[in-house]
Amino acid sequence: MSAAPPRVLTVAGSDSGGGAGIQADLKTMLALGVHGMSVLTAVTAQNSLGVQGVWDLPAEAVRAQYRSVVDDIGVQAVKTGMLSSPELVETVAALIADTDAPAVVDPVGVSKHGDALLHADAVTAVRGRLLPVATVATPNLDEVAQLTGVRVTCEDGLREAAEAVLALGPAWVLVKGGHLPGDAVDLLTDGTEEHWLRAPRHDNRHTHGTGCTLASAIASRLALGDSVSEAVRAAKEYVTGAIAAGFALGGGIGPVDHGWRLRGPRTAG
Image (tube, rainbow, N blue to C red; front, side):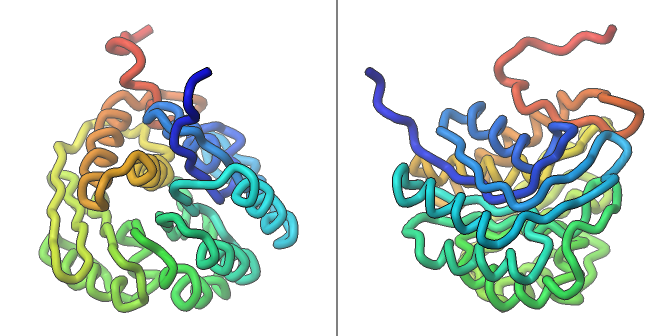
């Protein structure tokens, strides 16, 4: 009998199209060699064209799922994604605070298609309750603006954005600069160390699920024993490959390829 691999718990919403959310998280965890477990926070009707509906689960259902997994199986890392209401944010923040494992917080604000996934009245709870319990927070530039009011238009603004997010309490912040022109540049910092991560920008519009995938990859690498900077670098490399291999699905924006390392080059047809 084999020893169990490291265990990672995702607390996020379901993407019925399979490109983001719980589905992306579990695919990423499998690809990176950890055992993925899930706490479902919401169900979405979602495809390549957008989000057609969102239904939050009750806070007691989220709490019960979390306690069921953590109290019996245990975790080496936790990743959070879509938490749309103040009650869900506060519930999950309290659970994470009581768990002895690193937490990667992806403060999901909008979908790839521009659909709002965080209620306006939940932003305060993310700022005051969730970010202070995060080992690593992974906002994109739209989420930085939503949380702090800082708007970044060029690479030079990433440091100001990181400082503003760190002031809300996470141990580390990874500000994702993928929306800026040029190379995909991210800044990882704890306020003392700075790590600038660069990757070539791939000419591929099929990038659904990049944020979920990156946060899950970071959590997976932390569970495998990496330091924060090692985990983020490895996760960035994995996501860059997944973006390069992203494929068309449906009539809109297709997903990144979570299994790109498991198969040869994709051919057209």
